[in-house]
Length: 556
Image 1: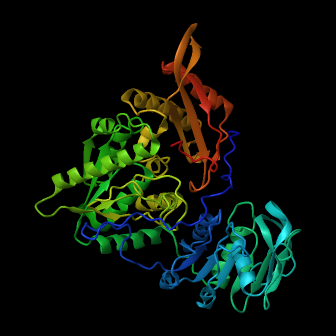
Image 2: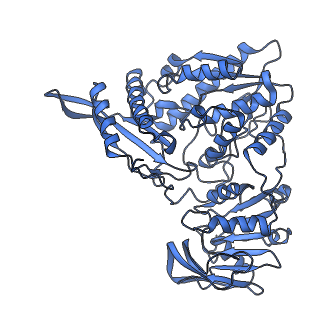
Image 3: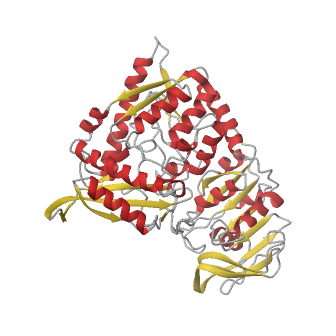
């Protein structure tokens, strides 16, 4: 067993504040541009109303871990949107505002009249206390990080849990008095009321964050709310996801033809197999070799899908086209959008070639994940962090209707669905790889063939050594970055002027947060020695120890 530290991801701010941005709609006279299948109702759902909290996405993630589907809804969304979902319960998230601030998000009292249990977390609890007649004030000092919690009256929500426990706090305002009809359940050194409930009305509040790993009984509290209070049956599972998405895909596609851009990564592979299970040979996968992949990846993808899964597959060598499109492009967003646009052009051309008379492909499959939607500023309205070629970088005249069966799934859920579909471990556990490929790992410069080949070889050395050390499955991502920088070195008693290779390795649960991986020193030494010995153009290797946030996993 190695001594590498591969613990829980770092906990820090995720993009707050809803801005309501979504992928632009097509013009009225354009072909439909849709990112959802026709509505279909999951067995049960708990809605998380997002007030811009740093852990809002993580709440939904933990609810799903309990076997209940959950999705974030912006606090500004129409009430009808929540009613339509017929939730079994509602969770009010944390947020950065003060309930007394003029522009703070308000609690819509109608949420308390829907006849379902409500749980307020942090700001969500403060909203409940403030609106229902309790007393919320700014404390003399804030509570941030691990905090001792004393349970004085466990009530329904905390029944059976220790009287003294630790939790994770992140607040400055505090509930000093619970509203009339509520029982105070617990307190801390700063928060007289750190948990409260009105069990008869089904309204509960906790000041701390049960969704983070630093609250040891947090998952138990969420489970208690979901099962004992909301009465959820916890039927959300990989098998149920497959059944539901197959039904959605069939309802959306009907007898239509479908085209899928297959990259060989987990997301596109699982999406492709889901669609193939739903509509069979109505699907044709197009594998575009854009010259930006990892070493030997193209051969592996073609062999797996064409030979093993018998999925109709067209392989296109478009590497020269992409290199030409990227000529002179150095700005990262411009790279992403250029590559995304070229993908669409290739899809259009291949769809035209595959068309039999009027039987052209009408649908385009994409492996968009929930984290892609959030980070692109769509869906629940998180601030835009970066565009993804499969979310925000699509041209406005796209003439396919999108089929996105993974759009509401986190990465680990997509992996579980892949296993359910029979994907082998080598595909299911392939580390995430960006759609724009190695082009966005060449920093500050143009993605030339020379630089791409060099980066590909460096990445191959890193992956080979990480697999040899038995750490590949334990890392969320590991890769190399090639800055457009040359440094002075001495190799073979000669002065050299070579490239710098950056090693990037992180651990994470879902890519929303990530911690830099503590790789063993002897492993790092082997990787660096091989790179500088085998790659003549490299004379310096460095390690990136930035977590997310404040950084992102990818550099661009």
